[in-house]
Image 1 (cartoon, rainbow, N blue to C red):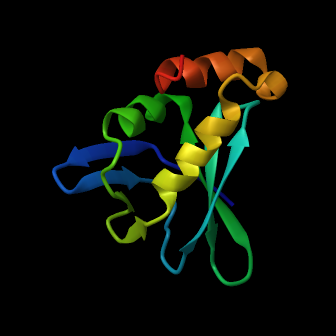
Image 2 (cartoon, helix red, strand yellow):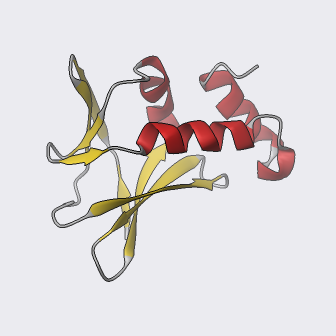
Length: 115
């Protein structure tokens, strides 16, 4: 299932992400994928039987970048311990790599100040 982050609230203690879909019973896998066609980052979650994808669309990227280093919490109860290191890994791979598509790479580089 694709779970879209549709609201983000920044608080002193973290980045609080909200989705209309429930995240009860899900745990983080600690892996992120790129959806360059739809300009998104997909963070893998596991329910014990299958994977779900927590989707961060382009409109959320600037908030992730501006609040780098804060812990990330989904629907007030799912703390993503490995999110930042996975995002950093993805950003390193995307930077200058036109295999993801020039427009996608350009959008990532601009938003995350990679140029």
